[in-house]
Amino acid sequence: MNIYPSLMAADQSNLQKEIELLVPYCAGFHIDVMDNVFVPNLFWNNPNEVNEIVTMAKSVWVHLMVNSPIVFYEQLLLPIGSLVSFHIELDIDIFGFAKTIREKKHKVSIAIRPKTPLARIVPFLNIVDQVLLMSVEPGFSGQPFLETTFDRIAELVAYRQEHDAHFRIGLDGGITQENIAGLTAQGVDDCAIATAIFKEEDHVAALQELQELANV
Image 1: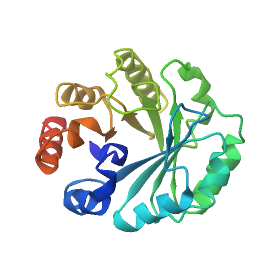
Image 2: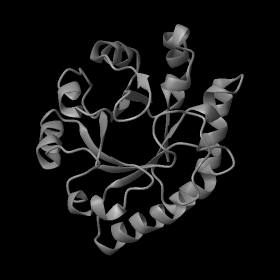
Image 3: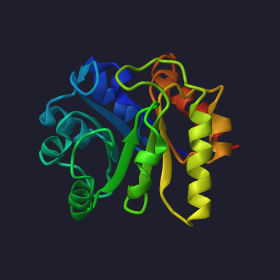
């Protein structure tokens, strides 16, 4: 499993040091973008702020929780191979946006809220690199993991096997030392983790413990 520390929970006044400390130990960093419209929070809603963070990190996974993800994305300066998540619930040209992301040599990820039926994403599963299951309601870190997520993972894994599909399964929200091993066993490939890393005094030790548990 790839673990991406979610920087919204990091010390914002000391972000560069936080990134430098963790960069040798993780797959990359998760960057949440929120516009206080699509979700009830405002965070890194300026493309220039995101671009500044990107210069510090070796690789990034950007989660666009905004009503106009295409406009925001086109202002980003992301390295090749970056993962870009946008939501199925938005009224946008999903095929067109996915094509734009691929043309910039980035990876396509469709995110889905906990209460949105998985049937909504089925028409697009052949064009994505990842499906991002939100395991909490998007907007705030520190929320408890929604147990209904296990059934949704199982449904996606079954679809992947039945159709010989190759999309990865990502999770964001409520992932801890207590549940990460079970998530790996069920078939999750990528996790964005905030509180379980940044609430601990030793962030590197917390990340390494999560990695050990995830890869038993």
